[in-house]
Length: 407
Ligand code: GLY
Image (cartoon, rainbow, N blue to C red; front, side, top):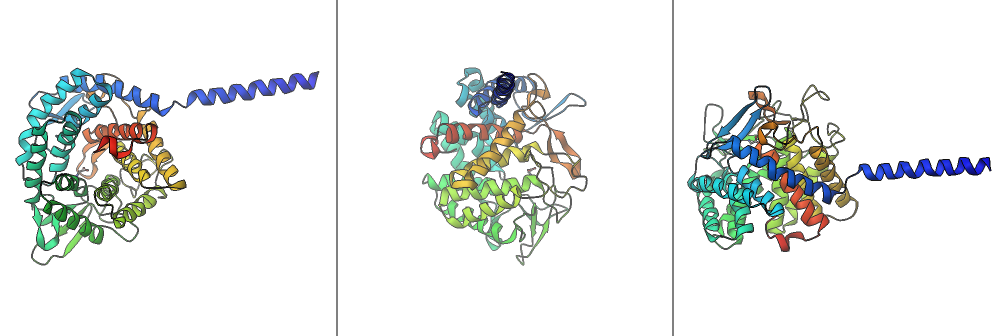
């Protein structure tokens, strides 16, 4: 009798342990719905904090000040692009009307040729707008932006020049530029100009050849000599010139996976896999997969994390998982999920009305310049939403690209 009682006690304790554990892990579908419902309210707060002629840039929690930008700032497209993901998921008409208001002020930048960021500035917002709303005007905006971007192509170095020459650089090409190639690949695929594809692939090939070290970490900047074609590797936003700046690695990984999507050329997929393996196995990668701002920051484990790099990585891992099988696929999905759960936790996700109206806290913009350090960043929010969207469409609903066209 006594033995029976002890046995049933053990059984009850064990089953309540199991059910507590089961309850404590929120299903991803529910988490995603909650995050989009929250974003629909929080981005309206952000909209109220930013004049209609400007775009949000960051928020300084210590002083409570909102920092805005004009529409030429490289991040200016992320706010309307984020609103469109939120509209797509929630069908909230207020969110759509804010998105349209912000698209209207951004549209003129399709003619901008002052840097390489036309992909971020135009393709992210108008690509989403065209995919979701189908207005041919948006396609026209995208095509025009692609024409602006190719004016920066430099034949001798087979690359698009990122920033204009300045006191620090002759002809800088930054790893972030891999992201802007999607604008050209998309326009070429849609039939507007096949030459844009050649330019994009030349750029990607040069990046593979020159930008990466043997261990598959990338420099932030290559500074080219436009007469000789020679270059010097630098880390403008990283800890030092030989360090591994986290967001740069995320841009590179995302970029090569995206180039594979448009080309189905296995060399880009292989390259992306090598980058992912390097990052996932890096001894400085924390358990929650939210990287330190630089993998070589001297004060790890006390160095700041960069939530924006984590958000970009989670989105990139999910796309790489689409082209991967078996255990590696599981590992990529699991890593993306770990990041998304971390970013959705109270450690990183702001409360309604806080953080200036941004979603995610603890991004690191440019630490060596002491700019946007441990603050929200518009692109952190955008790639968080994109990764949630991808997880929902690809992992939960299993729709792949056919349904969604552009992810
Ligand atoms: N240079 C763009 C970035 O901060 O990622």
